[in-house]
Length: 429
Image: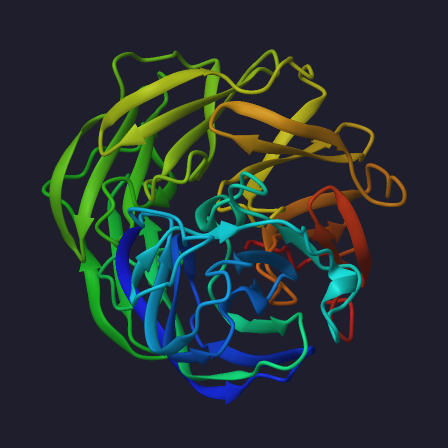
C-alpha cells in the first residue's frame, strides 16, 4: 500500500435555533483506509459561539464531537476553521475564536446521543479533551473512507442563530492494493507459475484484455520454489511476489509491473521446512504487507515487514491452538485497518483472532453453529460492501456459502449463488 491526500467538500446550511441541523457528504472512495482525518469549516457565522456543538459521524455510525461549548458569548463572523489532531492549541473557552487551525475540543456539559435531535440512539459519541481523551485518528483511523459522512450542528440555547457556507473532510489515506495489482493501475492482474518454477504475469486492463502476457523476473528459481502469496511489501502501491523454498526459506521479489526491482531471501533466517507461509496481511497498519506463518505443531507467527527486512517477528497471539487448527486466511473483520487471522478446527469450527501487530486483542469461535468437517473455509472477502471481511465456504458436495461478519459477530449467512455447481468445481479465491 501507499498513501495519498484527499479532500471532499460540501456546501453549507443554516443552523436551527435551539435544535439540530445536519448535512451529509459522500466520500466516493474505494480501496482506501484513513490514516489522518480533519474537518474544515468555511464561512462559519453565529452570534453566540458557546451555543454550538459539532459532531462528525462516520459511515460506520461512530461519532466524534470535535467542537463543543467553546468561545463563550463572543460572536463568529465568516470564520474559516480547520479542526485537526495536529492543531497547535484547543479552541478557547472564554475568548473569541479567530479563524485558524485548532485541536478537537469539548467543554462541559457532555452531550450524549439523546441531546442530538434526529441522531440514532445507537450512535457512539466520542469526546476529545478536556471532556474526554479521543482524537480524530483514534476514532476514525483505519476506517474505510468510502460512504456517507454526516455533520451534525447543535445550537443548544434559544435566541441566537448562525450558518455555515461549506464544510469538508480531508487528510491522508492508505491506498489498499487490489489483489495482484502489479503495475498499480487499480486493476487486478493474474499471477502464474509453471510446473518447472517459471513465474509469469498477465497484466489486465479489463476482464478480458491484457496489456502484457509473459514470463517475469531475471531467472527461473526452479520447481523447489513455490509462489505462496502476493502483497505490497515496500509500500509503492504495487503487488510483490512472496516465495518459499521446499527447505523453508522465504524470499520476495519486489515488482514494478513485470520488472523485478529487488529480489532476495526475506528476513534474517530460514525457519525451516516445518514452518509454512499461510498468508500475507497488514497486521500493524503501516501500509506494507507482512507474512503469516504456521508451524507443524500449530503455532502461528507473524513477521512484520518493510520490504525484504523483518521489523519484528514472533509467535502470534497468546497461545498455540495446536495442529488440529489450521490458518485459512486473513482479513479485516472489525474494520480497524489491521489484518486478522481466520482459523478452522478439524471438526469444522471456524474462529477468528482479531489482531494488533503480533498481539491478539480478541479471539473466539464464530458463527451460530459449527457446520461440521464437510464444510471448508475457502477464503475471505467483503461481500456486502461494509468494509469488513466475511467468510467464504464450500461443502464437500460443491455448495458455496457466505457468512457476513462484523468482527466476531455473525450477521447472516447462507448458500451463495442460485445453484450448486457440484463437487467437480472448487472455489479458488
